[in-house]
Length: 144
Image 1 (cartoon, rainbow, N blue to C red):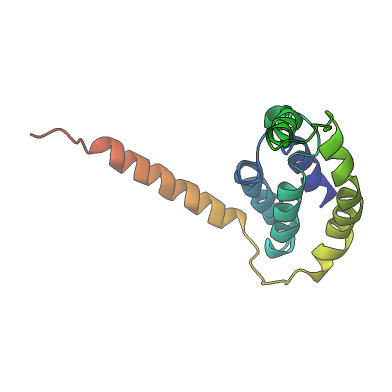
Image 2 (image 1 turned 180 degrees about the vertical axis):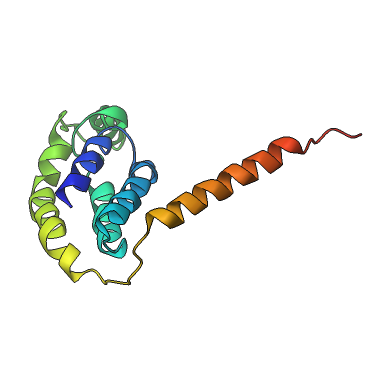
């Protein structure tokens, strides 16, 4: 799980959780097919990691978050005291507790639904996609 967590944590610095998962889930399925392990053991921890990490480091879209929060506070009559790392400092306790829990405990607690992918099923799916693409390219939308 640590090998899957590293790309999730890296991607989470720059894109949101859904985009991270759309990139990482095919990798998880491929790893599970190679190691003959159930996908259900890895999906939940990956989803939680992908959704708690974005916004931790002030990069990407989160770099200007403190300016937005200060502007809201000032518009409401308060004083904007948010700094560049305020959101990161607030998330540190969550990250310290949740990440080790996900990596070492949640994976053992996740249900084993027996959904182990195989390389043959992946090859059959790839062949089906190629066949569908060939059919789509052979048909034209122009009137004859």
